[in-house]
Amino acid sequence: MLAIRLIAEPDRLDVLVLPVRSADSTAEGETSAEPVSTAVPGPDGTADEAAALASAARLTGRAGEIHTQLRPGRTPGRLLLLGIGDGGEAAWRTSGAALARSASAETHITIALPAEVTAAAVRGLTEGLLLAPYRFRLTEAGDRPALTGVDLLLDDPTGYEDTVATARTTAAMTHLARDLTNTPSSVKTPQWFADQVASAAADLPDLRLRVRGPAELTTEGFGGILAVGGGSASGPRLVELDWYPANARTHVVLIGKGITFDTGGISIKPVASMKLMRKDMAGAAAVVAATLGAAALRLPVRITTLTPLAENMVSGSAFRPGDVIRHYGGTTSETTNSDAEGRLVLADALAYAVQQLKPDLLLDLATLTGANSVALGKRTAALYSENDELAAGVLAAAEAAGESAWRMPLHTDYVEYLGSEIADLYSAPTQGAGSVLAALYLREFTGDLRDRWLHLDMSAPSWADGDQAEVSRGATGWGVRSLLRWLADVN
Image (cartoon, rainbow, N blue to C red; front, side, top):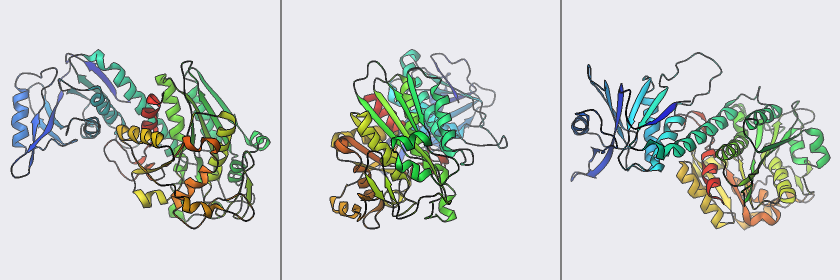
């Protein structure tokens, strides 16, 4: 990962980055850019040069705008003007991402930060710098960014050390979630995922891990996980990871859907819909990474993370549409569609959390429905909760983190569609709105935590078709940043 230093005196000025912000619009409605006074002045003449260049190049100062000026024989040899928009955290994150990509051919850059830069701005910049260059490749071929070092020039570097450390942990955990999600399913069996969690948790103190295999799942009655995983030669698992600091006052359970590959089962998907189904465990990746991040940051909140892991395959032992599944705790579901498997494994985990863990708050993240993208597009998760305070807190955390979510309704009119003639519930009724119905189904397993439960359908934003700001093509690690922000304030 990119090395970032906080310094008060530059010792290497090959490339100097100076921020410019958006100024007031002109009478003609055009936006111009103006240089920002930096905490540590650059070499003589660079400030005046930046002002002249901003005007001559007709820069707007929008976040992520970059202008490069070559200065042969002088120091610095290259001057980069970096647009920071309104100077808020989101703008700085976008600017950091743009800079990391634009300067990828450089080996080292120095960024002169504004005199009154906030900790939030430094965090946004650092996250952008660290997240944007991410690439997942299983080959050594291809170009790699040459940029290995960035210096942040500040008058008081020590005052921002914790901020940069938090941003670095957040980026590292987001990278982990992206790696887990991007890994091909030929490698990523349920046991492989459990092994990755064990390896990552071993480096952090005060974490407890339990992994249930098929025998334990059978003994304890996790019928949903067993049904979905029954068609695969790679048996299902339930990972339980617990972070329990001594000063914790609140217990949060995080649940992440962990379908390591989804063929759709007997209700088989078309090839076009199946080829990216290695991402169907992005919810599990996000909650595990967030928990590891909370442990690394020593956040004072107890977190128990549950990841029901299964591979939904087609075989003679695969579950069938019309089967009745008995979930943990005894509730039964008539399976109307074997491609609606995620809610079956989540139902087991929710019921177990309510009955055995009895947390204060219960959250689940899942790549649950294609209806998520139909309703909200490619970058926004659907949020469901009956708790206004909980919903507002998670939405605020997502906005601060640069991830997008939108609260959706839990229409009571749809509840009747869940009724089955032979079981307690239909797993996937054909009536109503798909994402809403899936949330209503999960709500049936929340028991007396119904008013303290929140569900995020994050199928759409878990994957990006191209680079955009700090998001890189492929798995996005959506949810890690939002959860870490929220968990830091939950007590």
